[in-house]
Amino acid sequence: MRDPIPTWYFVLVVVRRGDQFLVVQERKHDQTWYLPAGRVEPGETLAEAAVRETREESGVEIELEGLLAIDHTPSLWGGSRLRVIYLARPKDDRPPKAVPDQHSLRARWVNLEELDGLPLRSDEVKVWFQWVAGGGPVHSLELIRSEGLV
Image 1 (cartoon, rainbow, N blue to C red):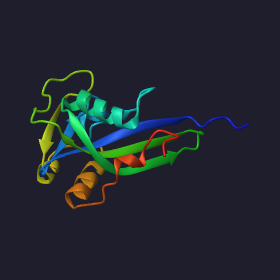
Image 2 (cartoon, rainbow, N blue to C red; image 1 turned 135 degrees about the vertical axis):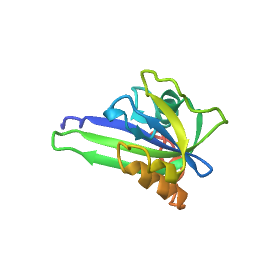
Image 3 (cartoon, helix red, strand yellow; image 1 turned 90 degrees about the horizontal axis):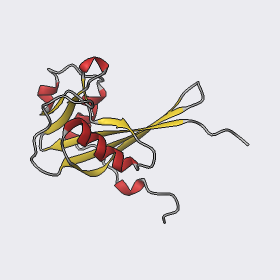
């Protein structure tokens, strides 16, 4: 019998409102700007984690619209990382949080031009925003489901 492969699950959320996208200034990673994102907690679905992480980091309540990608990265140390990238929209017009807390420093809406003026944790922020703005494929949320469902 083989030992299980330790796997860490993360969610990233591209939240779009018209021509604007939600970004979060992180407490770590040199206080750069990134997507709402984080690790899935035990007993939590991927979708639940996406909604929770977005709320905690930005103060914005969201509704998931679809899946952009699933990344799986095995490592040489025997574990792996799985990331699910969601597309979402805000549920209401509530402004993003402006007061730092343990989750993030602040959040804001930006368009693609404004994004160029922010120090980003990764270029993937701009890549995902351009993908969505350009009409890249969005996949059904039903692609991820609980085991045993038909």
